[in-house]
Image 1 (spheres, rainbow, N blue to C red):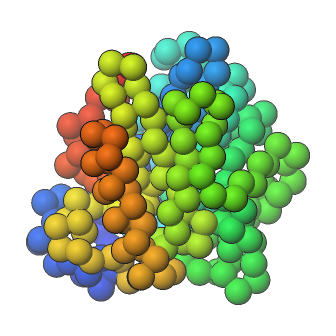
Image 2: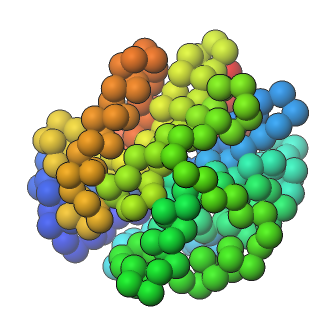
Amino acid sequence: MDMSGWPYFEEMYGVQHNAVEIPAQANPCFLVVNGDKSLIWDGGFPDYTPASPSPGPHGVIVSMPVKLNDQLAEIGISPREIDYFAVSHLHFDHLGNWSYFKTSEIIVQELEWEAATSKNLENQIGYDSSITANLADLDNLQLINGDYDVFGDGSVMLIYAPGHTNGSQFIVVKLRDFGPVIISGDVIHFREELEHGVVPNFNIDAEESKRSIQKIVEYAEKLDGKLWIQHDPVQHKQRMISPQFYQ
Ligand SMILES: [Zn+2]
């Protein structure tokens, strides 16, 4: 889906509206299949989001012509079969389809859970206390502290990278043929943030954000992997989407 139309883009992202090639974010979800186990990374916006551009939360214009449930159905997977639902952080644009994954193990950094459910932060831009209240009712929430090996074989690692929020993380997926892919969550939103060395002003901690950006760049270099900036609209257009896949 696309998100565009922020009235305060420059103020929010620290770069001029016209300095960004496409000032409209993509908002993808990622399915990882490892043998007979599977993981969804981030839940995007809810499938009931209109297909054509419409006003959404926080003054953002949203559109979602392709629905997650339809994409999963197309490849013969029911959301109920997904083993793990790992979330980069608990902002509303990453949890839209949370209700599909009530039977999955939901993996979140403990510091992120504390931030999203604390009385001080629950009204901070991005958190939606109605979603976190629903998640709190589930008994399959797994709170982790720091880096985490999802399948226990080193193929998929969650890496703690705070700054955008207290408990943000990114994911490293080591694919057999395509090689390592590092998917950013919201550690970076646009390629231009990297080029200009800026962090969005709505990040909770600018210095930690910069350290986490350095960390993700170092991971990509060290592993000789691809850095996929999740919301970046230009990269998004270049990536294959389901039913195509990388292996
Ligand atoms: Zn986001």
